[in-house]
Amino acid sequence: MLEVKGLTKRFGGNLAVDNVSFRVDRPMMIGIIGRSGAGKSTFLRMMNRLTEASEGVLAFEGRNVLPLAGKAKREWQSTCAMIFQQFNLVPRMDVVSNVLHGTLGRRSTLATMFNLYPESDIHQAIDILDRLGIAQHAEKRAEALSGGQQQRVAIARALMQDPKVILADEPIASLDPMNAQTVMEALRRIHDEDGRMVIANLHTLDTARRYCDRIIGMRDGRVVFDGTPAQLTTGVARDIYGAGADFSEAATSTEIRDHHDIEAAEIRNAEVAI
Ligand SMILES: Nc1ncnc2c1ncn2[C@@H]1O[C@H](COP(=O)(O)OP(=O)(O)OP(=O)(O)O)[C@@H](O)[C@H]1O
Ligand SMILES: [Mg+2]
Image (tube, rainbow, N blue to C red; front, side, top):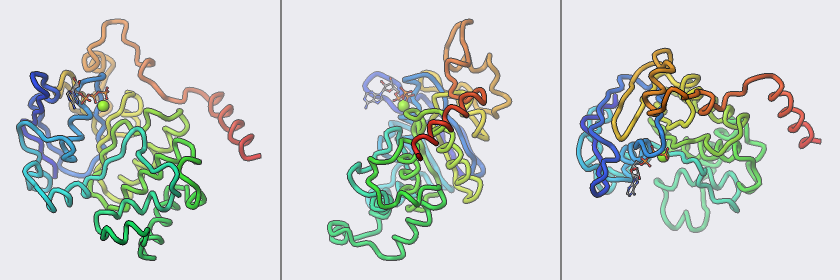
């Protein structure tokens, strides 16, 4: 389904991604981990064609997508929707309009300028918001929502493109543990129910282990681990992060550890509701 061969990106003399190769035979949920500067974002950006690769092949369903230009390139970009750490919503615009922006690729400039959306698109947007548990916020400005809700709006916008692949660059890095969990659960459900491939750069080990079928570890631009969560032992993780014997998994953890934290969060939420 996806075949990456010898993928390389040089920024001047710096090898950001160094001869990366792997293949994925079926839609999976894949987590990419590694320390800062390992090349995780550069890889996703090359896949989405936001960054041009220096060398290599990235074939999806048998076709190398790296040489695509013009309309074919734009079509590929909507096939692999991207989600970012900072959500990239229009803060002052309402939630539904933000989601409808996901249809930009298939509408005329004039229709876009005057915010003219077909009724079927509006219904679809609301259905997707409903599926993500945030339809009740459809008319609010995006900026009025919590981080986790905003990231779900961004996921809804991505789903409007009906992508085969969702690329998520640190989707939960700005979120508290409760919101992080909701967003990861949403991505997992989209994978399970729709059969879409999800590739997410994640900065915590336990999130990768908990939600992904396969984990790719990068170090200095290279793939140094490619396996299942069970194969990702502490020793392997230490190697990926290039850490010493004092390496602690807890340092990369966002796991909600005990009921006390959940209770405290529930009380806070209840207070907000009142
Ligand atoms: N536009 C750019 N111009 C020059 N160098 C770049 C550019 N983008 C990334 N790099 C370099 O490429 C390398 C990989 O960066 P990248 O952003 O892919 O890492 P990352 O694994 O996503 O890190 P982080 O966890 O901090 O997001 C780094 O050395 C970075 O400085
Ligand atoms: Mg990055």
